Length: 196
Image (cartoon, rainbow, N blue to C red; front, side, top):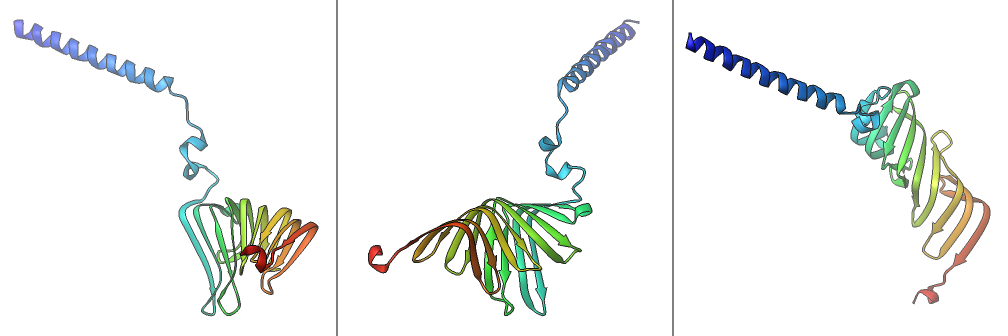
């Protein structure tokens, strides 16, 4: 009889302990605020169909590269045929396969035409475009693949070997590498004598 009481008492103590732990866990869970989509991370955003780290895409036709896009992070939205990329680098190639130009920014929005064709790229935040030995900087720029044209509406700073240019608005025909500055153009030309 004594053992039965001891077992019953021990069972009551264990049950009370488990109930106390259960109540504390419930209180802890109830006190936590639900997390937002930003807190959960981009891979849990419902409208994103794919989330890719170290994104890399290349278009090759007849054995030569036409364009290449690399980014730290990418989110693909199938309904819009859009890829939003972080830290993109877009490389554009000549008909012979040589590097024609490349452009980088903080964020990019790629518009696709199906799985393999690139329609356009819109880059924002610290955009830098390189054409041979010329570096162009602006806040936002876009590339239209069908017209092979890069445009920027805002302020543009251009640095070359012998000149510094500031303008508002630009258009760059990528294949012939023709640059048009649209407004308020200011140029500083440096001679070889001023460098030494």
